[in-house]
Length: 238
Ligand SMILES: CC(=O)[C@@H](O)[C@H](O)COP(=O)(O)O
Ligand SMILES: NCC(=O)COP(=O)(O)O
Picture 1 (tube, rainbow, N blue to C red):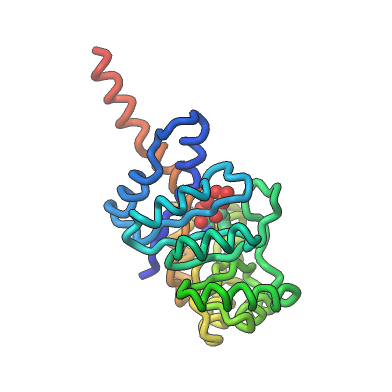
Picture 2: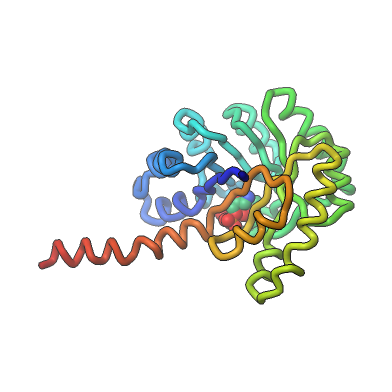
């Protein structure tokens, strides 16, 4: 069984859009755990447009399952992660102005930088993961950094799967998961996974330990809850 870590960035986006504390991120994360999710993921970005650095500190006090913090290891992110001490840190090479994560690490070019950062986190008892494309060279490069895990960047899978080319979409991920496992790396995955594409991914990617899912899961939750909530309003307006 692969663990489900729910990315709550979108809850923070909604909260920030009105300036108050609705929805309450801490309560949502606790409820997500109560409903059975095995982890909470956040991805604070330098502009704090959704998750604020203070959210990471507050969540650390309440999250009882696995706490995963993702981000580009600029100094203030490294300091935050060391202060908070989550279960896992996932390193993502985001550009400051990226709308969302749009690339995996070049683990060959950035090997020595990644190695240093990973050593620091591991010394502090934090499990490490590196966000990478399904590319054998990048997986081998990741193994050379000493990281505990990789997170496979699944946008290309989601896009191809949506066209109906299911086998073609998943085959690079099947291959690199086997290689990662043989190199001693744990395998996580994330980005654009959804109710539509997750089952096929899980069935075809061996050694999958954890998926982090945010955007689709929150959209699906809104949509699947809409009928119920509209009827609750209609009842109150009778
Ligand atoms: C690392 C990754 O795959 C991302 O999907 C990310 O964590 C989502 O970030 P945003 O919510 O800012 O799009
Ligand atoms: N690491 C991926 C993640 O946390 C969520 O990505 P998405 O489901 O919001 O695309």
